[in-house]
Image 1 (cartoon, rainbow, N blue to C red):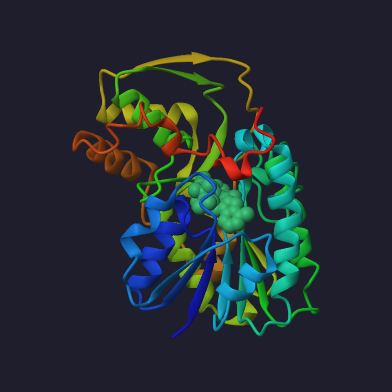
Image 2 (cartoon, protein in one colour):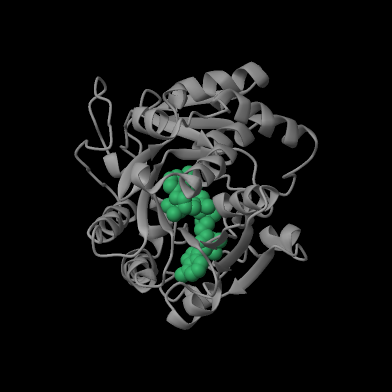
Length: 337
Ligand SMILES: NC(=O)c1ccc[n+]([C@@H]2O[C@H](COP(=O)([O-])OP(=O)(O)OC[C@H]3O[C@@H](n4cnc5c(N)ncnc54)[C@H](O)[C@@H]3O)[C@@H](O)[C@H]2O)c1
């Protein structure tokens, strides 16, 4: 059985991936530096004989060496994730998302890995016309530090084609939704659902802008599909990760939430600070890997509304920083202004 190292495995996606791979019988190792003091998120896995946690930083080669002993494949999830956190901490962002990830990709070359999966983002498409659909060959237009670093890292990995002993794969994730041990309420579907459920008046900017969404558990399943795929299907390929069914405008998300919370209060505004608008084609991942999401945006909203009704996340207001990428833990927060 494969032994998978998840770099950044204590995060929102990583904890769900850990859980999924353990259930499927994989051996899972996680390297993470708890940059948001998110230690609590890996607690459920401690004690599982197939799980090993390494506290460490992807910028440190000794940590990479220690954590990757005996692993067959690596999934790279770690980084400062999102436009706001990279804007707030540009220095840490450059050190981790640019230099750190680049060095990390090079570090793993020559180590006998089967696959190295780099998780990127559909944010790389930036702003496209309403009648266009971005496939993997669509021109990239990264608008933020976050997306610019992802485009750079993709290029670093793809430039190793023919030069590496591993099979490199890039997955451009849609925006995630769904419940995770490391819950994030700084992602649209979950943020809107929580705010509306808690009776706040939600202000939504640019409600007609499109984005693709995907459930975290579907991402976990897709990563497993890639780990198990024949090399020639995925070798140095880029895949948009998600499904056409979950291309949504913000207004469409709100309308779905209001079906579950009919008395919710919502206001709309124009010219918000986030101009991203992109509708994405997920044809390649469907054709080549047979991947289609099993959860719709509506399923994710229902799942979260049920969790909120049951009293989960009752501390989401008082402990806001626990539930998103807002503030780096002190040791990393050198450039916190
Ligand atoms: N969540 C989304 O909607 C979304 C959308 C598109 C792409 N992605 C990509 O998926 C991946 C995971 O996203 P997420 O939502 O789980 O993010 P997250 O912020 O919840 O998790 C990131 C994890 O990386 C760790 N980390 C950060 N810097 C590190 C370092 N230097 N060394 C070791 N660990 C470090 C953090 O402690 C955290 O546990 C990211 O690569 C992200 O760009 C996510």
